[in-house]
Image (tube, rainbow, N blue to C red; front, side, top):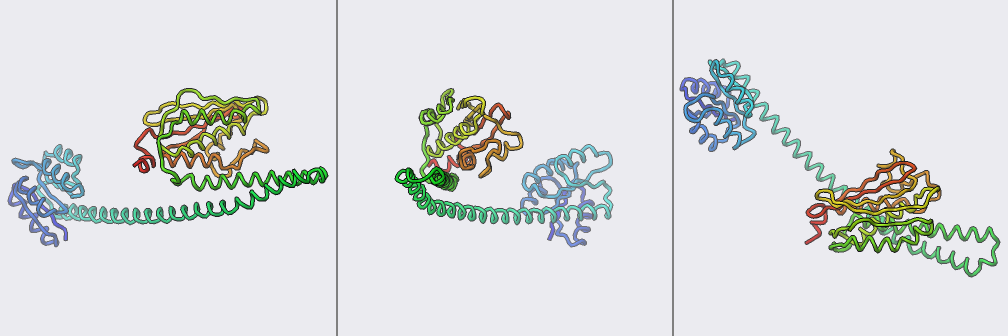
Length: 381
């Protein structure tokens, strides 16, 4: 049942409002001034308040402000005499939903009360709908998370089970080439080499699938990671790969200490640098630069190359699984390196993106939070 509180210093107005509201089936409450009305409001919590804007002591505007602070959803209808429209405008700006002009006309009062009641009902329905929608989204999100976890477990198990026979195939192919290669003609050796090469490629794919299944999960406790040491050791390991094509890799600046999984973070840098060394320009040796800069509350890293570049339409899609640039024929890799990097970065609370000029090179950026963001906090403990 709707409760309506009428506040007016004129007794005749209060009586008219009280009689009308009771006749319409509402619970009617009345008060002769702002203080009494506010006390009654705190005790009864009516859904609608009708208040005169001009009263001695606490005026209607002050009552409006105070009841709105107590209950933001309360419907407030202000009453005013002729010539008080400035007060009405102020009241509407303060959150009043309607106004009545004295002398009160019953049919206008009836419409105003009805509109207030409908707004309350509509807000309640909207709130219930929003709460139901939130529950549904939460339920679907939970189901999706469970399915993703099941899928990751499935990928992990399948990849793990595939690894042994693939390694066996590669091993026997290598053994056949070593022990019986001189007994085979050129075509036979070629076929065996193809078997070994494809077995090695499948082994790399299985390793990347395993890495992808682990990239979104915590498999080791997180710790402080000295990225300066990590990056420079990684570059030492990759120098020979760069020199084979006459290129170079270098780091500029000093890298920070962050919180995370050292093996996963190494994998991010490795995959981005490996990608740069894979997509080299045919007319120049690769030059790869790894750097760092502060960006507000974030650490921002970049890997810049002078390779073939990426067309604009591919920039957002390079992080999709199995996505590889069609321009680079015979490129190494499994098409999962950038996907793994993206998942690891996001798991650490950061973002990753790329910019590029086709024919001139690309720059891959990623961020990590300095502190207090992402999953790093949840795992710090």
